[in-house]
Amino acid sequence: MRARHPARPTRRGHRLASADLAVIEQEEGACPFGRVTRRHGVEAIAAYTAEELTAEHARLMDRARQHQDTSFVRLAELAQRAADLADKVRAAAHTDAVHVQADRARARITR
Image 1 (tube, rainbow, N blue to C red):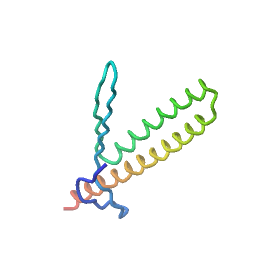
Image 2: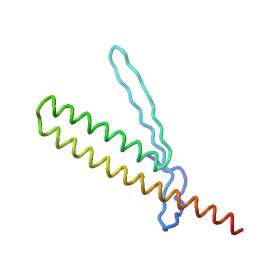
Image 3: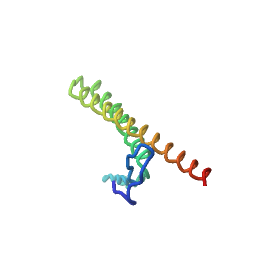
Image 4: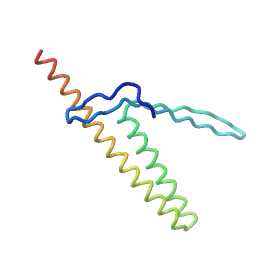
């Protein structure tokens, strides 16, 4: 993730940097493939992260059931906790974006 523009002030005085994420996936073997997934903005990146971690939680729980291994359950719990934190970041970024849009609208009205 890299910042593209200088951070912009938000209503609460925080500064959110613009952000871009590119995930490159490649598989080798009989049917190789490559895929690039792009997300723009803190909110979109956090939502993508939460989705991926929630999917990883499900995969780990499946493995825990298959192998009757509690270490997979512990890893799955960590993945879910991380997904919950990513969702909180997404919600906070959304709230900040709403405040920024409201401030811009108020500025246009008071001109």
